[in-house]
Image 1 (cartoon, rainbow, N blue to C red):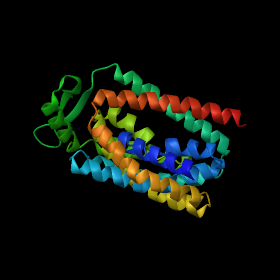
Image 2: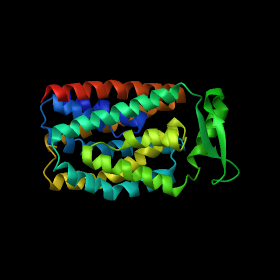
Image 3: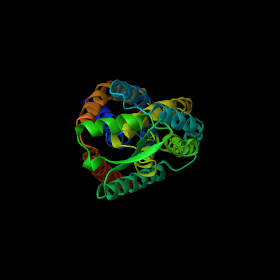
Image 4: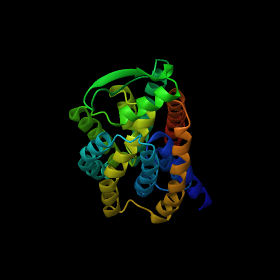
Amino acid sequence: MVGVFGVGLASGVLSGMFGIGGAVLTTPGIRVLGASPLDAIGSTVPPIIPGAVSGTWRYSRERLVNWRAGLICGLAGSALAVGGALVSDLINPHLLMLFTAGILLYTGISTLVQVRRHVVVVVAAEGPDAEVEVDLSQAGDGDDRAALEAAASHRHPIGRLTAIGAGAGALAGLLGLGGGVVMMPAFTQILRIPMKVAVASSLVAVAIFSIPALVTHVILGHVNWAFALLLTAGAVPGAQIGSKITLGATDRMLRLLFGVFVVVLAIVYGTAEILSF
C-alpha cells in the first residue's frame, strides 16, 4: 500500500511537471508491485483525471493554459480513447507494454534532439490569430513571461489540434496512458508552443479524454480499485508539487529533464517486460 501510494505521488509530480498524465510511471510501477498487465493498464486511468485537474488549476492561476488547444485536443481524442480501450482487450497485453516502451523511447529521443536547438516558439502578436517567433533561450525574465502569456492566447490551426488530440486519445485508451506523451512533443515541436504552456494545455486535454477511457475500462473490468484509489490519493498533491517545480524552471531545462526521464523509463519498462515473457 505504501509503495502504490508512493508511485501515485511520484506520478502526480510528473503530471504537474510534464503534462503527461502520470500513467507512464504508474503503469510499470504497479506492474512491478504485482498488478496483472490488464490491471496495470486499467487501474492507472482513474488517478489521471484528478491529477490533471489539480495541475491545470495551478497553471490557470498563472494564466499559462491555452484553453482552446487543450479543449479541442481533448474533445477530438475522447471518441478514439474509447476505441483504443476496446481494442486493448483484443491484443496481447505483453505486446501493449512493449509498444508503450517504444512510444516512450521515441518521445524521449525526439525531445533530447530538440534541446540542442534554440528554443524558438510561436506566440500571438497583434491579436490571437497573428504569429511571431520568439527565442526563449535569449529572453529575459520579463520577456519570457510576456511570451508565455502570448502563447497561451494564440489560436493554432484547428486541423492540427484535432489530429494531435485524436492520436493522443487513441493511445490513451489503448495503452492506459494519459496521452501527454504524444501531445507534449507534438505541442512543442509541431506547434512550437513553449514548454510551460504545453504542459498546462496538455493537462486540460488529458483530463477530458481520460473520462471515456476510464468508463470503458471500468465496464470491461480492467480497474482494480485497491490500486486505483491509492494512486489517486498520491497523484493529487503530487501534481501541485510538480507544477510548482515547472513554474520555477527554464524552458530548456524542462525539455532536458523530460527527455532524459522518458528515455530511461522506456529502457527500464521495455527490458522488464521482455524479461517477463
